[in-house]
Image 1 (cartoon, rainbow, N blue to C red):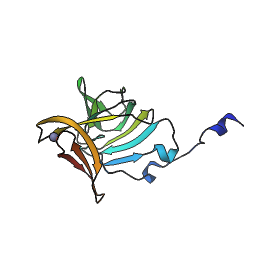
Image 2 (cartoon, protein in one colour):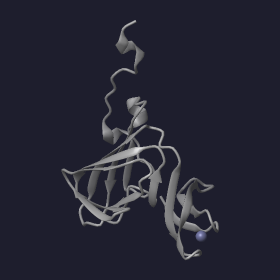
Image 3 (tube, rainbow, N blue to C red):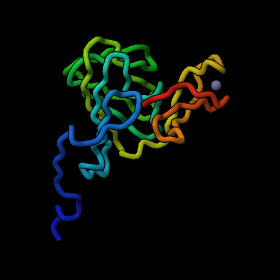
Length: 164
Ligand SMILES: [Zn+2]
């Protein structure tokens, strides 16, 4: 048996053929599965002004994440304050590092996010909760009629965001 046959073979995918997810991004196309990727998480994003890669300020327990900005500008909230990245730049966050990228510009953002390992581990997602009056840990849930994803405050159960 040759070494190559041990692995999943080459795959090619046209990004626009991959369906887009509901969520905080205008377009999110999850490429890992169509590519048969086993060790890396690969997501293609387009963000209209005001949209975000993520549901909130968050950290992945086990996964480092790299963002390649192909077009537009993204402002990341980071543990060290805001950092803006523009087309042609690459940003890397380590496992356990809190961040959230938002398109605060007036141009559509096109970006690729690369995460490894593929299993991100525990997600800690923080959002402002009006009821609690502070930023709290949240979970993400699908509505019963599956028409939206909602973020729920873990402290009080209030809905803090709704994404279609
Ligand atoms: Zn709350």
